[in-house]
Figure: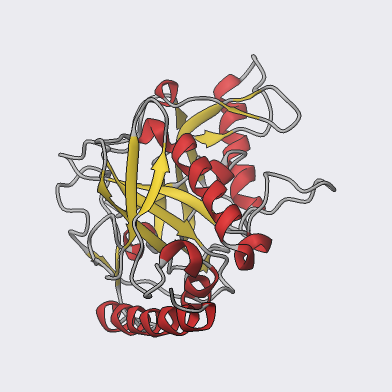
Length: 308
């Protein structure tokens, strides 16, 4: 078996190659129009928009993408379980990434949203024919963390002893066992491409429902829910939305009804209620966007929508 030093050298070579491939395939620069997804058009990247400097979320536009390569056909309803198993593996195998993992709150109550890695489901959504099938998992990175740095931190999980991408086994219990593999290519126009989820855009729709920080008041029930979603945007450092539409029914093609998604549990006990939402800003916003109390389990993940 190779020594740990040779493993690191092999992984470094693979990491450098992947990084070069991504830069060549993306080829983006400041001022270049960026594609955004339609709500219901059959092509997720049917148009191009021109904008000024967008407001940016605290997450990097480059995410580590793990593509499903075997196992049962899964839907977004397994998001909480899938992200939980992946977080367990990262905590166990990747000590260098330990500081990037965290709970919804630290022991002092400090929020880590946008400052730690967050696994999110990558599914077929946003097209008229979308069925919500999971294609893989993405690891959102804090904007200050470089993609190459993240690959090095995750190398013991992502690569084998010879430096090749490793098939990662995720045991999900009743839904079955699936395997994911680091996707080395940036797939422009695909849900397995980082830019699919980044925009910039002024309107965004939830792929997975947003976890609510507080139980909604019975009086003005939906108004209170929509205000909580708007507050979650501000906590992420985004502008105050000009409009929020909340609904238990999916507002994006392929997304499941919020009632079909398992409720998460707070650290202090009790269920976290959740809702789908469409948010609209006055300004262009560059994602990815991940909001709400269930961010650490992939809830509150949004997809950009093209303006009508």
